[in-house]
Every structure is written in C-alpha cells, then in structure tokens.
Image: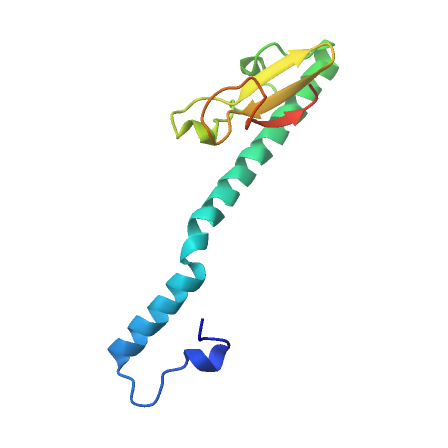
Amino acid sequence: LPYNNARDLRRQPGESREAYTQRITHVFLVWFGGNFGRAAEIYWNGRMQDEMVRVMLAAATYRTAEGKWPQWLDVLVPAYLPKVPRDIHTHWNDVPLSWGASNAGAYVYSVGKNGVNDDGKGDDVVIGLK
C-alpha cells in the first residue's frame, strides 16, 4: 500500500472532503476488511472453547462426587452447569456440544468447521482425554 504512516492518512492539500472520505474508507477496507470475518471466527471459537473447558470442569466435579464420568451432558444440569452449551459449528441450530466418556477418560467436542460429527476425530475440536 502507498500508505506507510499516519502522515499519509492526513487530508491532502486541495483534496475535497468527499475524496478524502472515499480514500480513507478504501484504506481501512484494504487494511482491515479481510480480517473482520477471521476476527469473528476467532472470537466465537474462543467463546466455544471456554464453554468446553467449563463442561470439562463440571464433568470432573461430577466424577469426584459420583465416582464416574457422566454418561450424558444433560446429567450436569442444573447442579453443575446452568445449561449444556451449544456448538457454534452447527450453524446456530441450537445443537449442544458433543460428549464422550469411558474408563480411560472423557472429552467434550464440537463438530468443527465441516459441521459433521466425526465422533471427536477429523476437524472436530476436542478438549479432554480420549
């Protein structure tokens, strides 16, 4: 880009207000436009992973009290979780996060960007022990 510092972004002598506004709008769209979608994706993935960690903590608390991992996430509500968090990768269809447990461990997972439940494999986002 021809704009290397803040001085390049100042209104130029003789530049109309309209031309300046269009130029600056273009600069900001070029600089930041491609990143807004990625920023939103990072934000929502972070939020979902926070919820996944909360689920694992609730499940570990349940295990301490009951001596076993919960078979389903619904068992944790309302004593350990206010509600089962939803998976953002199901395109807002109100589908809960997925859960798996065995004697070896437990894990919570999202179906991932492809929107397909791969049982904690493939592009599924997994937190916990399998």
